Image (cartoon, rainbow, N blue to C red; front, side):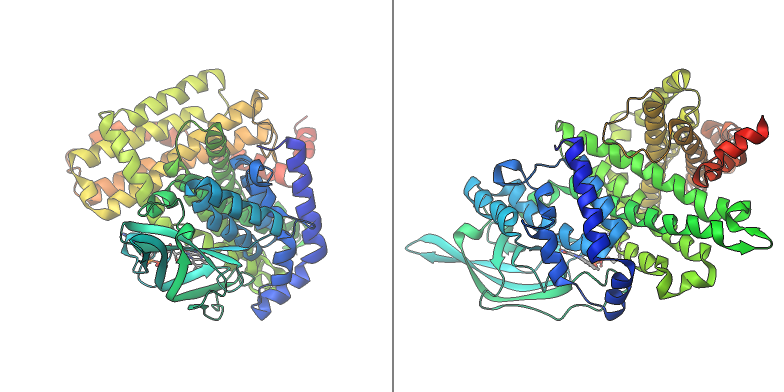
Length: 559
Ligand SMILES: Cc1cc2nc3c(=O)[nH]c(=O)nc-3n(C[C@H](O)[C@H](O)[C@H](O)COP(=O)(O)OP(=O)(O)OC[C@H]3O[C@@H](n4cnc5c(N)ncnc54)[C@H](O)[C@@H]3O)c2cc1C
């Protein structure tokens, strides 16, 4: 992990670099021309210039040894600038991941030092035309080349699809089926038989180079097999999902906030019906506030997960990474969509930028695992916890928030507890009725789990903020009072969603008869969840006042 001061300096360098090299006009022009600014990407990796890669690399190989929390902060900042450029950095990080996780010490020294010292740009070649979400279906092969009975190299043959940096990378990590199973290989740019297609013409992240790769009997020496043992590829890919999904989560967060940070000031200047839009509750409470609460709920979860990854004793935290990615990318996408609406007709044009952000952020709910795959990942894991604990997993979690509420009565912990108890009841009904045989129910449970866990996370962090105990690098855009208000608003939504949608899916799948509905409603504690909605509008008003710097005015008026 790097020092707080160093992180601050790195964030500032990144902002200064973007201000100089990537002002809005340049970004809009490159987007319009559908062009990846290769020169700027190289400058970002140049050890004598920005050298962004150093943050991601371990110190022993010349990097700065940034942890998950540092990487989240940097990724959020990069996404605020441009998600296409951020994706170029992400691709190098992903490309070097199998090396960081699974390479031999010699391979690590060679390749990670090269990235640090020479700014080598990597691409990560996993996806294939017929193997996307289901990577196990990959068809690219790695045929052994033997000499005197010894494996001296491999010949790779196959096709890769949608590879970020595919046309501009210096080196590629390529997943291929060796005789011993899926394995990662490092392939140089320009190796005989190795070609890439022209850049894809994409909906968004148009500053990112995305290209298909073709490998036709591409020879690599045996020392290019990462880790030196065949069959480790899928394990190596999975070992870092917690971490890499937190990065994409931070992309969703950064892009979502970038959109809101354009809509909020715009709404103070745009006068309609005699007053600025920022003073119209029907505008702020629909187009701004819900997105603030969703983004901050996702941030709470990202920060907790990053802290846990950095603490290093809980494995790869794949499910938590999935929840963070799911919530942040969906929140970022929705925030950008609302920002277009907030700008009205102007939002629908290229020049007002939120339109570009919306197209860009859309990728975060697709790459590094689609939202549907995230729902499945989340649901499957927590379903096991539910079974193992005989239905007590979320009841136990809820009880922790009941205790938190006693100490911190203003952070919505009581309502988060209602959400978690209701979730436990929904999952139990699903177990009794064997409802997860319906894939749709399984995936909807994933969504409800993500909401309930994020509500808890946000309450917990609002309490820490109130006690002055947040992580020293935590992003504190809001003071403790505002954080508590945001936590209450989100907890109300999560509890209502879990209970009402849970009821809907359980009843819809035949898990509860009409005679049993009332008892199930009582078990979900729907009346308490409905009562907890009281105070919602005044809390939303307060968040609006904070966002629009009207808190002092509000205090003066009430005095
Ligand atoms: C711009 C861009 C950059 C990318 N960069 C890279 C990169 O650098 N390296 C790399 O290896 N890959 C990269 N990808 C690939 C990306 O990770 C995949 O596109 C993604 O994982 C989805 O795979 P797919 O496109 O094959 O879609 P599919 O897997 O075919 O999915 C199509 C739809 O079906 C849903 N679906 C899939 N399986 C199931 C299921 N079992 N149950 C229910 N629903 C399901 C999905 O959620 C999705 O909505 C990139 C993609 C894009 C578009």
